[in-house]
Amino acid sequence: MATSYAQDGDAAGTFLGHPKGLFVLFFAEMWERFSYYGMRALLIFYLTKHWLFSDEKSGVIYGAYTALVYITPVLGGYLADRWLGQRKAVTYGAVLLTFGHLLMGFEGTGGQDTAALNIFWLALAFIIVGSGFLKANISVIVGQLYPRTDVRRDGAYTIFYMGINLGAALGALLCGYLGETYGWSYGFGAAGIGMLFGLIVFVLFKPLLLGRGEPADPAALNKPVMGLKLEWLLYLVGLVAVAACWWLVQNQAVVGTLLGIAGTVLILYVLGIATFKFVYGSFSAAPQVPLMLFGLGGAISIVAFVGMFLQAFSDAMAQNVAIVGFGLSLLVVIWQCIGKPNQDRDRIFAAMFLIIGSVLFWALFEQAGSSLNLFADRHVDRAGVPASVFQSLNAIYIVLLAPLFAWAWTALGRKGLEPSAPAKFGLGIVQLGIGFLVLVAGSAAAGADSMVPVLFIFLIYLFHTTGELCLSPVGLSAMNRLAPAHLASLIMGTWFFASATGNFVAGLIASATGSEAASGEGAGREVVMAVYSQIGWIAIGVGVAVVVISPLIKKLMHLDTLRDDGHLEG
Image (cartoon, helix red, strand yellow):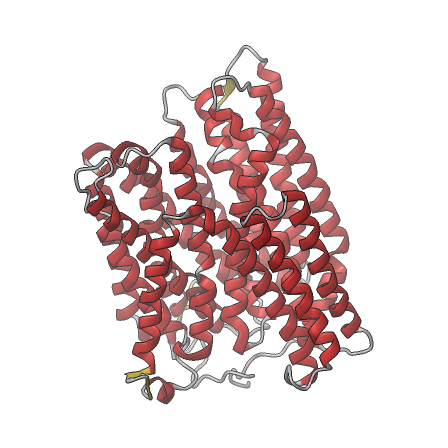
């Protein structure tokens, strides 16, 4: 389905070679990330020091919260694709986020003050759902400013990604400082004000977006449904989601199960559209036996997650049942692809490959939030600098290096030398592994009885950041380029869902390998280094394999026949 615009993305003028609308989105997202990371910098301390939760319980709450933040873009993306349009979804998300961040400033008396604690849960819920409406959709608008074949696209997403990290760095530093020095309400209040700035920027400079992100059928939003205009009914759905997240964030065990079930449904839904709807025109026109077998595989996988949650299956049995279910569905996909060429389907398959690769990347990358932070606190010579300060290194590196990467991709693209998106993914995973191995080498060189020089913390974050710059902004661009216009936000939502899955898997890896034991006094640094050595070599091996098969994935992308969606000719 093509999407046409009355004006080219450059019609309002350019800045630094890109449409001015890109910088509206840059600043809106920068302030949103300022608020999010500013609040997140304080959250674990707020849980332990103000609400007096145990470290263990605080970690579980924190994990459930971050997972939900990355799940809800699927809802926001679907509602935007189907009815709202990306601009209205982003505006609504910004309103919810502003309200949620300001609610965080109500401290109560601390401890287990039930009334104030319920306000806290509600604040988290508003932030979770607001992020869901904003995150996937603002990235889609970035892509809509450019033709699908424009060589500036990867550079644009890298600039946009720089805005994300500029906000993240400033938010963590300023909100964290205010909250720890002057009081929680000052830190959270600053986060709320930052989000309000982002909302104002997005609303005031809307004309520079040149009609991007508008609803496909504006008249439908004004039609009454159940006594309300459809648009207001959709906003009410958002508030129902807030209520659901208010309950979920208090019942963290349910989140993991829902993550598995929702992930299964989402992946199979996207694969089903690509395999059946793209080829046959509709599910009803597709051959019913393969379609039923495909659905049966998904149902078997869902039964595995539910059985594990209800403790009817052991973990090993649930894993085997899930593999059987997914395997059946994938065999059907392969069966249906034989002798039935379809380029849109192939592009979705390429996008799913990149999404799965991102799960692995984030599962390893997100070790930084727990075990690496603990390692820096206990085993690194920091010269008195708090270990948490080093968490800002990633964002600061991205602010410094993103322009270089944006220039490099554009320059290489003009010369026909730019690596393909799958090759960039492989290179990113390799650099992730190198970062872990550099820290392992630094620890070994320092000796068991000496603290590790802080240089090696700077180096691991440097390699992880260059790896991230090869993967994350490039992935955002690839999702928008490969997805048909009517599925753009859903595919982008699936990309963010992969981040939620990566965060969840990161916790499983930490638990299975024993790195979580680093929170206990008896754990030695050699245990953590053994884990990092294993992770490092696995990452390098997988990354090299991705680079090797990248030509095949690039072939599935069919870049030579990619056409722009309804942009002006000439």
